[in-house]
Image (cartoon, rainbow, N blue to C red; front, side, top):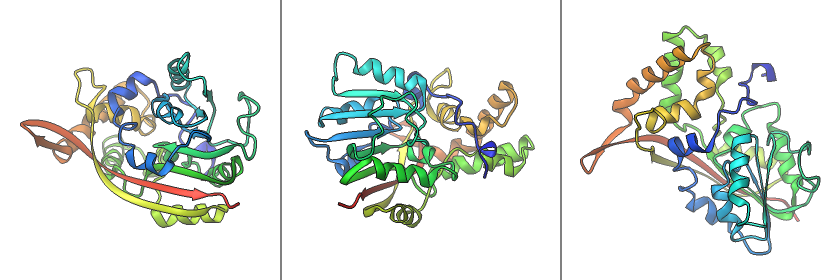
Length: 293
């Protein structure tokens, strides 16, 4: 698939306020991946797809230095503001993490080979690896950036992640708005690999794979809000925005979101302690891969 056929990843749909309303649970549900990372006081860590820096700050408190990269201008501004005056050992840079071999607009030392003890990523690699044309190079660059014996630790969506949303979005766009299936597939912003595929990709790159695991983890969404920024509606508007961008106008996108939410409401809603909660079928893939000595 050519770059022209891929969703426009240069569009910045992200901002900290919208993310906190729709997906504030993401940096909170990180116990297992942080146990895999095990940051140590002497380590230099690179966080790719760092978002607004919430999780980065927790890691930085346990390591020597942390560099965070994200393609979102808004996220990097927020992360940098959070770090100012509180974390002298953190730096954040706006950068397209699909192109770790291109140091443009970065501190010239940030992407030197053999710089980091660990490279980390949480809930970002399924975006970063979406482009099959840059996928292999991203993994090669992570390997290059690590010191010998260093490790790449990450968690991302795995095969079947949020399948109910994926299927419903496809159906609504295809049958209600007559969007060709191939166009919907091209707009899909996510890469959710199986355990076997991720293991083979890492091994082919040259990593020694210590762990690749899949976990089915139904995840409670944020509360619904009157302005539509929370709950299932907020999740779709923000995290599935590239799907919605196949529609030409905001009114059509609003109708599509409403239709998807209506179709999914009974599927994702549970009653707990007398109140309704919404859950999506998250599937997480975690991995630890080491650069040989």
